[in-house]
Length: 186
Image (cartoon, rainbow, N blue to C red; front, side, top):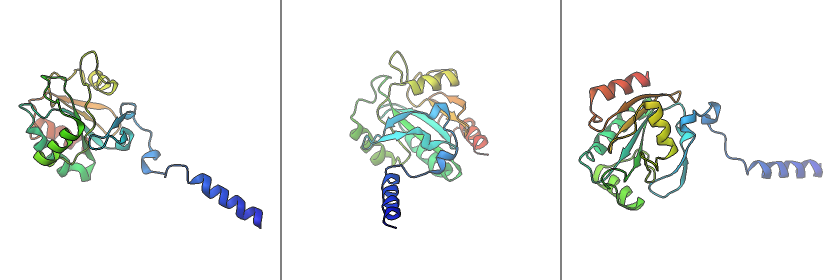
């Protein structure tokens, strides 16, 4: 009896070291989402596989750009469609006109305090050129183009396929973008 109790106790302790099972583990994470980034607010590591089976809108952002007001529309999109499976992912970038010079804390504070951004935001990332992050290199290849400016958008379906690439001037309110999101959510 004592040996069984010791064995059960040892088994319980060893199982506590394994992460809890999640529904996301049921499905294979698409290759494009097999990425890790620090979260903007606190630099906690984030695995993009947590967005498996979601429709994902990836946006490179900047705080001092003529398109910065798109944060408001992106937050509205996220609020409207998140219950149906849309997630907006923001990636601040200083690649274009040095329009994102701030620290992670400064960017996070600006996004939340100015536009009420609650969608996931990640650490500053290079989205084009020689220093392009591998995630954005995959997006550019699959979407047919690298971002040419801030607030370029890539739409990824639930299977991990890039199904749209939208230039900066396509706003979150644009019917073309909304129609593509609606179709992907069906």
